[in-house]
Length: 288
Image (cartoon, rainbow, N blue to C red; front, side, top):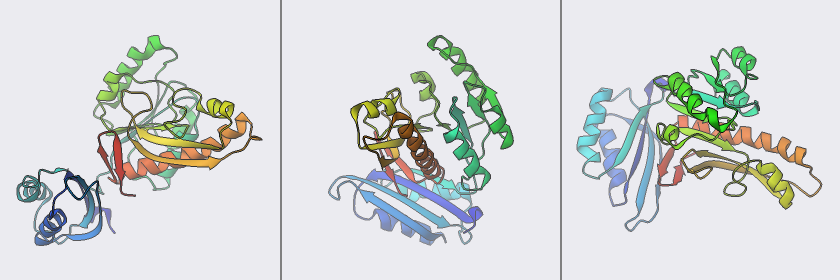
């Protein structure tokens, strides 16, 4: 289906009878054709309700601005909804932050070049210079913002804010091995996606593969999550695991982990871009 014709509606509200009928009835009356609908209720008796719809717009009798106002007036106010309407043709701007390791950033750049990630990439920012050539090969502007110790954080974040404000809609930490300040994170609520190289909440913090190897785990994993002020505790978007054994050395765990990180991060970013995620407190509802 054409991106130009596809709209998406995300809804969060208290559960009650008639929500699906109210939303679908509204779209039907105005000439929309619903092509995808997913819903989730935490408890049918007084719980929370979540819904995602995709619908086609060619037959609609309302322009985009009028559609949003009409939905608010006719449906959302009455049902006290928290909602968001978007259009597939409006590609979000995704800035990538990375450090010395390149595998996660290169996966995103490659998928974008293949048309799999429907985004624009205004820049790749790194505290190392090693990714400059890779960014150039994909036609992405590269910015080296040095940050080697805690004393450089304020200056680095000020420079990144200068580069990003008004130019990016969300950020991806593709193995960006620096801890962002609470003030910086607050500028991007639920708009910074991080890939952590463990199956959270196990082995949070630094060098999780070494921690896992020392504990003799039988499963390693990777976790993509939204960034909050609390380190590695933001709402989890996606996770995956792989089995390992006592014979696997630390380098083998890291090599296997890199494959997991690439796949998990790519899925999380795609779901974010396609408006398949609703954040509710410190949890996510993902309509994948």
